[in-house]
Length: 160
Image 1 (cartoon, helix red, strand yellow):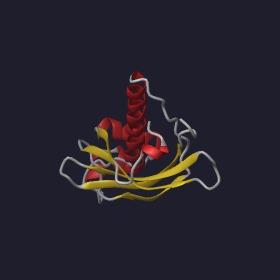
Image 2 (tube, helix red, strand yellow):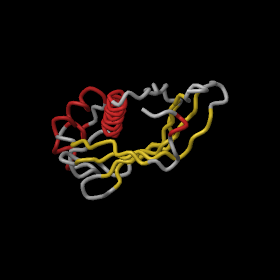
Image 3 (cartoon, one colour):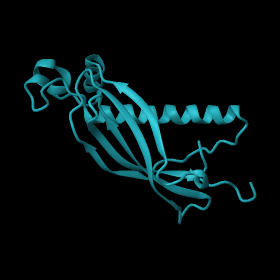
Image 4 (cartoon, helix red, strand yellow):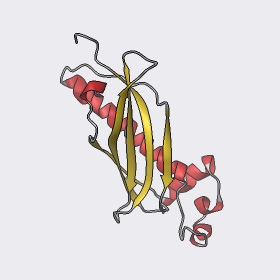
């Protein structure tokens, strides 16, 4: 992962794709969001969604899983090149979470992350705060998910 100084506003990162199967939708819903339109095809078809719909939390969780996996991949690649790895800190939060369109069984969502802001942390010396907007787009090119989230990102040590 990159250090704060190396990241530019506007940087675009393809995170990956996830296909929502009926089984994965039902399994997630049974554990975390057991509403009828997430658990049963017929109920989903008769709902406002028009089909078995993934929980919005499932859509966001798939995004987070891909985001972490991509960060781990980037760290492995940097390590193989002998580069120092920036170990990012936690997220101080998110805003503007939107579930724009239903994600139905069989949909494949492509997630993209774009840096929209960065600033040095006033309370944590040696750290910056990065804000990025992550979107998910289905196979028809329709945006289905969006969130703006922040993360603490380490700065390079002085003289490094």
